[in-house]
Amino acid sequence: MVSFAEATAVRALDSHHYQANFPDEWCIGIPHGGFVTSCFLSATALHFSTTHAARCQPHTITLHLTFLRRTAVGPARISVRDVKIGRRTSTVHVSLTQASDAATAEPSVVGYLTQSNLKVEEGLSLSTHWSLHPAPPPLLSTQSLPSGDNKNWTLAPPMHPKFRKAANRVHFYVPRHGQLGPAMADEWVCFSQSGEKFNQESLGFVVDQFPQIVEIYPSTSPVSSSPATDKEDQAANGRRKRETKKPNWYPTILLNMEVKKALPEEGVEWLFVRVRAKKIENGRLDLEVVVLDEGGDLVAVSNHVCLILGAERNMSRSEKGRGIEAGKGESKL
Image 1: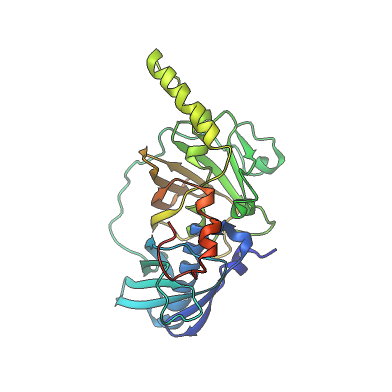
Image 2 (image 1 turned 180 degrees about the horizontal axis):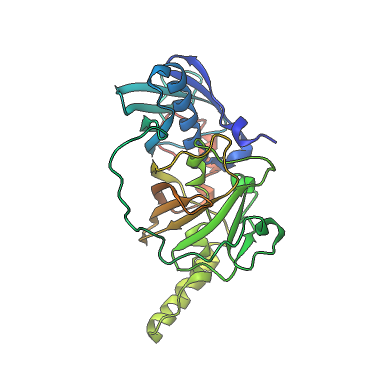
């Protein structure tokens, strides 16, 4: 079993190009978008610990990725172009290609990352009195989660585990008495492999690993005061239940992330994640993701734009039969 650290490890080809490898067990049909994001974080961290070591900017503070084409299991090349190298922050452009001839391959993912040093940042700080609303159920203790003794949180079984292999690599603990809203999900998350911990690079994976809003929506629909709306909700929920018996695919078009806090060097075992959708319409949804540590401190915020497609679009036999290499030809979305 390949650990997360091993799976996201990259090696330098030269000062601005890095080799990654996407294993099958970290896929959701194709390589998981959050996993790919973590590979970008790993490559950028290596870039700034070698090519720009003198800058001492080990932490990604902002990330913006656009997913153009589907990625594939196997080798991948991450190219880094220095856009602005500064004293406090530096920004790089990144791109990912997968093809036998990297020089002619079209990128599958492109984006920008900004580096800094979260441990030495200085400047004005003000309390905003921000908090999650509605407040999640009290944690009590993380020690009571694996044992099943926590009265507020319970282990959620993975949905469609054969298709969503990456979801098998974490444990989700969700509110025992149901989610707090129809288009939101709370979770406490840890790696399923004993001893693995979350670090800065794994935040890309964390902000893209949660119970799917569309698939838990029927069980969290609030009671309406309008009889007509009740009937409409019941009909919509019935359709949704039928549709989600088969796995859906939620390809990421866009993923942004801002990191607010440096995690300890040794990593952390537990993180809290809240994901919320503002509008789900015409097969497209937005996601707002908030990550907190065990002490309730804000670690990262993220926003996604995703499509809602049938899983057959992910592993289409007709597309396999075309012989189009990953990173070449038309978009796979």
